[in-house]
Length: 165
Image (tube, rainbow, N blue to C red):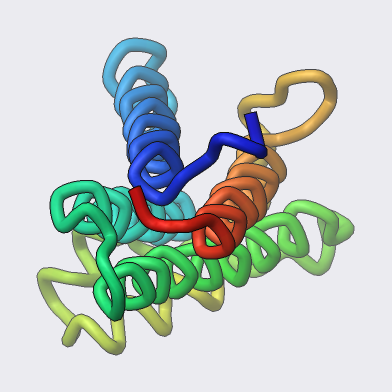
């Protein structure tokens, strides 16, 4: 598959995977009843940014400089996701006596603070971010999101090395 991963196919794959991951996040929240913590919401924004970058690359057929522009958006979202997922995993690894107190939800912070303050407060994390409510194969949701951010950035990097189609 890597030999035939041309830019349009690569962007389509990145878009499909990030869309599927966002769909599962919605399913976990609205069907399974898992309430996302502030860091989970910031990680969703990273997947949205990745999906938008991949969609842009797919629509523009990733020609010339646009190819790099859309890849930069994907890498920006991926880097943001890696940072937030890493912070989330660090909070989950803390001993119970070192976990920060629970703070307000992200919706409350956006409503009453500026967006920059809300993001800063969310990134500091809270007690609810340290809880592990879901795990698959022994890896929590932030661990899986970290994995997928890296995979999506690798796919994008591979597509940048391929000729245009």
